[in-house]
Each structure stands twice: as structure tokens, then as C-alpha cells.
Length: 404
Image (cartoon, rainbow, N blue to C red):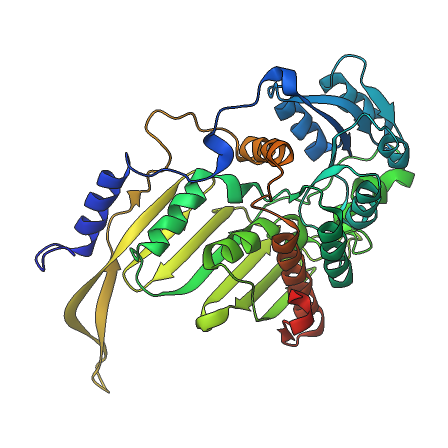
């Protein structure tokens, strides 16, 4: 421990500097990359905005051969094929792609309501699966998919890439080392100032292209934005929420959507830890941010950086109310210190690259992914509980059968 004359801010700053060269991320991401000769033959189902982004990353990964693409929208399919291997096959029916016995694995990057049926079909076809978040549309699907994956012995990874990112691993180390003290709250937000729509040439394609606007296809901001932050909290506390309350509405974008354009939830975790999870689509200030509040310090996580703020208490009393004589101990935060992570000089890649690298490693080494069907189940159930809490304005409780 630091000497009494050393402030917590000084202690944390000194400790972070010393730890910068010592922090080693203990996972398979930093192992030697597989040889190009050992390529995994991969197909991708869904080559829209996210799917095409994955295809772009895969082009730079010699351990993967993207040899099949599927999308129901011709422009999306052609985009995917343009990023795939020469001679890659194109499909408009995902079931035809799954019939290709030369494929080792598939990526599923489609609207949420299609995740479960496509994942089940891929399991039946014997393909290893990388399924984009969140895992399933509802709770029964999440519970059933766990059973099917356990019976299959296939590699099944969920696209929560932050579980593979050294920044979050270092934050978890800091929590374990008690730098923050007793943690009582997480404050999470994922905000945008956007109608969140894509242009539609043919009105008949509105719901197919802008599926995020409609409950028939997804869970709105909680499933499409805040899912990552819910999963991060689950990862950092090694648990799932026990209950949740929430409020949501469509108060800004009066454009025919029926998913919320704002939602605020509070999740309760074991030990009384609270996590507020918020998304609004009419203001982008501090768009993505997670704050972890402890009685010794706070960690603030941004996109690719994190800062730690020590608690420093000034015991001087200030008068709040001259009539009653009420007083207040003034508490202030010290200057933020950036959290160092990874090895010195190590290249920092887009988090999804680390996740895809681990997917390939798990296939070759027959290992269980860090982001797996059980962690994916917990995230999907938490998302559904949050939406149900907002819809009904009642407390939603985690049921024992969710964790079987």
C-alpha cells in the first residue's frame, strides 16, 4: 500500500505506469497466427453493412478463405462476393450455402430474428458458427440454443468482440487488483443523433432494409447498440443480472417505427451492484461510454481508451443551507490517468479481428470460445428482460430455469 502521505491519485498513476510494461493478456489472441496453408473454408450469411465489414477484415486474415456468400438483396450479395476469394459461390438461400460440404464454418450476420433458425440449421449441417450479437430474438430461443450447441460439440462463438480486446482485459485486471475499491455502480450509454435508417429505393423493401425499426425483427437499441455494454458488465462482474427495471419510448422519431428511440434501464447484479444502461437516438454526446464507480476510483471506458480517476476527499465543510446549518463534505476527482494495456510496441487491431482469430484458433484446437453460447444466452436474456421491463413498467426477475 502507498504511504499515508501519498494520495490515491498518485498511487494509481504510479501503479499504472509501472504496470504498463508488465500487463500480459492471457488468451490465445497473441499466439502465433496459423499458416496460410491451414486455411479454414468459410461461408458468410448476410453481407449487409456488418457482414461486408467482416468480409473486409477477413481479406487481411490469411488463415481464412471466404469461399461462399449469401444475401437476399442482390447488391449486398455482390458486395460480399467482391470481397471474397476468387471464384467464391453466391447464394440467395442460406440453406443452399449450408449444403456445401466443403465449408468448415459459417458467419451469420443477419437481422436478429433470423439468428436462431439459421444457427439451428448450421448446427444440423455440422458447421462451426460465428453468430453476430445478440444471440437470439427471445428467451426460449436462447435456452434452446444452449442445449443444441452442447449436444453438437461444434465451436459456437458470439460476436461480442470486446471480450477479446486487451483494453477490457486490463480493466478486469484492475478490478481484480482492487484499484477501484468496492464497486457499486456501472454507468453505460450508447447514444446517437440519427434516425438510424438506411435509404430505401423500393418502398416494398422498407422493413427488410430498416429492420432495426421494427419489433418484429429485433429488440431496438438494447439489442442493436447496448448489447455490447450489457455483455461487458456481465464479463467484468462474472455474472448475469438478477433483475431489471426500465422506461422507454418513441418520443423523437415519429416516423412509423415501433422500436424505442430511447430507453433507460437499471440492472441489479449479485451483491447489490447496479448497472444503468441507456440509449437515446436524438443526442450523440459522449456516444459510447462505460463508467465503473468504486469507492477508491472510477474507470471511464471509451471506444479504444480508458481513464482512471482517483477519489480525493476534501474534508473541509461547506454550508449548504444557512437556515438549517446542513453541511457537505466536498468530494472531487483527480486528473484522469490513461490505462495502459497490451505489450509495449504491440500492434492494436480492430477488436473484431481478435475475435475472428480466436474463432479460427478454437476450431483448430477444439477449444471453447471466450464468448460462447452460455455468455450469449445471458446477454440475450438480459436484453429481453430490459425491453419487457420498459414495455410493462414492472420489475423483471431472472428465473432459475434461465441458467440451466
